[in-house]
Image 1: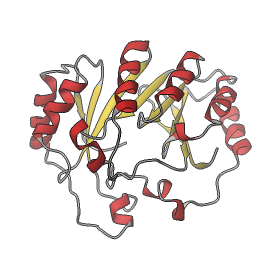
Image 2 (image 1 turned 45 degrees about the vertical axis):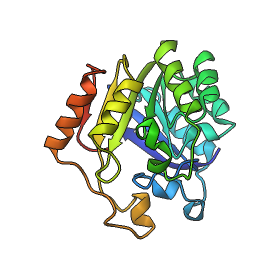
Image 3 (image 1 turned 135 degrees about the horizontal axis):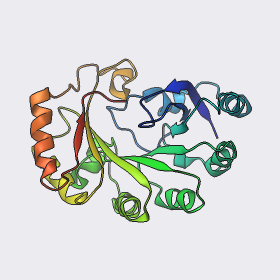
Image 4 (image 1 turned 180 degrees about the horizontal axis):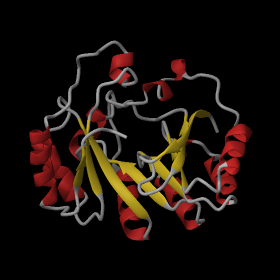
Length: 238
């Protein structure tokens, strides 16, 4: 498994817990608004961190930490992800997984073995626009819909989340997403935030996207709440 980064302490990545965050390399999507563009483009990958050193740091701080978040990139692309998590769980720490939902079989396997305690799945767009928003020519929605249904039904603590980007999302999309996720316990809308790490900016298109105003975000939240009453706003990406 290629570990591209390690954040020793965070209060943001694992809600309600003091955690550390492990960033994996590589992703099967090319979302132009991705905040971690250097983890997506193989040409920008740096030498991976030593797994043993990362685990040693987590072990040293296990009496302080309240959890570990594993994000990316897309962690479920790594076949040895379960082995890595087993070593974290041996330290008796809860694990939160961030995923795009493209590998539902891995998500199911991790949960049924007791390796993950929470999952945050990114909902990139309305199903009718998924390929466009993910930077792909085409995409099969079957795995994403399977992941959503499994996460909602299996009993795991979860959060679905969508980063809203002016130029990619609109109110019609919110209606479609609301119908797709109807009944979800937790759905977060968060605002796009321009930064040097955004994939489209790395690729030289700094002006392609912008953030919605707070008023526009409130309007989109109101639409989603018709199907998902527990939906809420987070005004900047985490």
